[in-house]
Length: 147
Image 1 (spheres, rainbow, N blue to C red):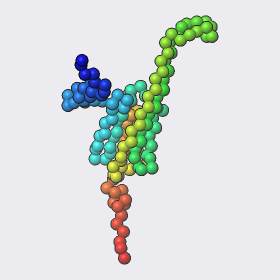
Image 2: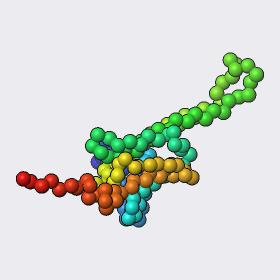
Image 3: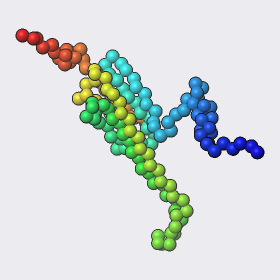
Image 4: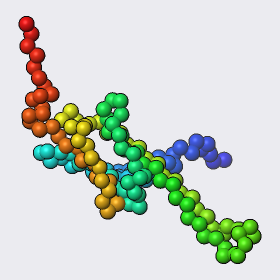
């Protein structure tokens, strides 16, 4: 009589060991790819958003001063039989799609939160995070004399 293993947890482990390694890093299929660029004057966050519009996104600063990027997209594709009377029609194919994403990013101290801007270009959401200038940094770090 052969021993039967009741716990099937070994199967996902085999796949994780095979696919999540140095050669083939496991990707999160539900989250878009994000790039963060830094220059001397600003940070730029790029979010891959093919097929999305600016209306699908909500960008705000939360109560902890973090940048919150959220996206929600609902689409409905219909292929129906071509009948003259709608009440006699029936669906031959109908697909619903719903995507939702939220990413919270801790902002560096040198970001001027009042000047943050965003734009959509060619399926990429670009969020510009300007840095404080040297003069603005000095004003923000005012030293208080003790008397």
